[in-house]
Image 1 (cartoon, rainbow, N blue to C red):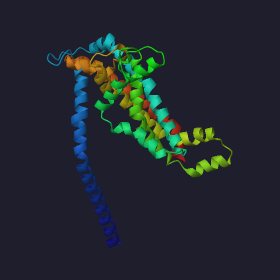
Image 2: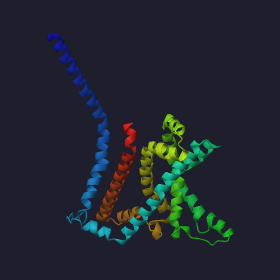
Image 3: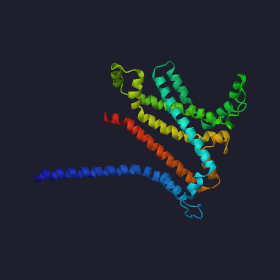
Image 4: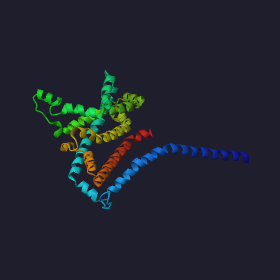
Length: 304
């Protein structure tokens, strides 16, 4: 009995040693990534928070919420926030809905499916500078679109220097991102259980009911992921607008990134830091809402 107890005890010790060894090895592999995140993300963000509460990086006098009040009362900041919000509210849902619609269209087995898929993925391989050049050729005052409009009896429109410029940027955003969203939805649709769809069809469910109660529920994690990805990409559209219109575009195209870029150029770090905190707070709230919605709709699937 004593020998068996000693053997069992030695086995427990060996298992504990192995678990500690595996933890050390895992920690060693994770350490570079953790240090990189702390050094290049967490630490700079803490510095940004600090700058938002001081008058400037030199004097470093604590001013409380003064910077937050000044930034939110700034007219340029309000314009930038309004334009960015409007663009995201319009462009992001369109990117998600149209990407899903294209995925369902290609999944239906239409002719030339491979060719169409390649066409929608082509913008991903085009550099940003080339995309801007294409859009300049299309929407310049003497560009292709205005030539076509004149042939049909319309007048010339200075697209990038009018309220219609936002429509041009939305079209650019969709043209660039729809293909990737479509591929993500196609991949997710391949994981929907076929037997559940067959059972629903045998029970007399029509296509709309199958889409709403089966496919949409199983696609909810992908919808959330594509929404977050599209929202992040909507903030990156500043690159295209900047190359098309410069630092100070027409009012409707003045985005939050323009405000932050121009503030950085003027070395007004306290305003830049405060604007970044506002932007981070809004993003955290939106992410939280999206995760809550996805958890609410996908909870019954996890229980199954």
